[in-house]
Structure formats: C-alpha cells, structure tokens
View 1: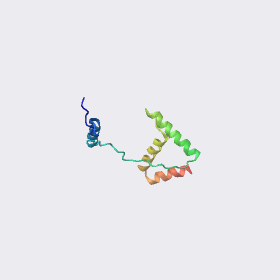
View 2 (view 1 turned 135 degrees about the vertical axis):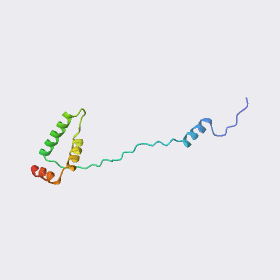
View 3 (view 1 turned 180 degrees about the vertical axis):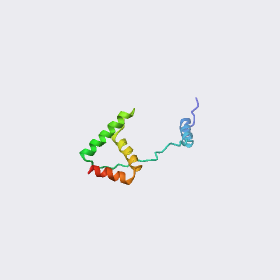
View 4 (view 1 turned 45 degrees about the horizontal axis):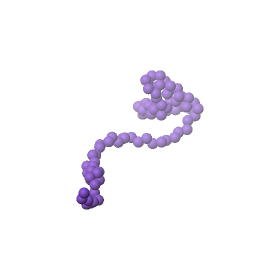
Length: 94
C-alpha cells in the first residue's frame, strides 16, 4: 500500500474554516433601556404605604407585582399629575 503524502490540512480542518468565513450576522434586539441602581431611604410609614399599594395592585392583577414595579407605576402617575397636587401629597407626609 502506497503511503499518502501528508500536507497538514485535513478535510475536517477545511470545513471548520469555511464555516468561520460565512458566519451569519443575527440582528438581535438590544434593550433600549438599561436599569440604573438608585437607593432611597424611606421611613417606616412610607414602607407601609408602599406595601399597601403593592398589595392592592397584586389583588387587581393576575400576576405578581413587585415593589419596584409599584414605584415605577407611581412615578408615571406623578409625572401625569400637577405640581400643586404633588405638593399637597408631600405636605400630608410631613
């Protein structure tokens, strides 16, 4: 049997190279919003109000609502409110 000359490139190595050259570019959806961590100090009364609001939202929803989601909802409500109404609410907390 005649010995085959070894060239250093196998058929398997050649198929791996061709796959690297023809990589498919996938258009993945990148998140448009990136969460930023921010910490706030709340009094015991404020935490009790937040838990009450979250419990009310959980009763009305078919899925679990976290306290963070409740805070985001309250921020949206606050952005739709007038400045005077927000100041009146602030006065009630003092």
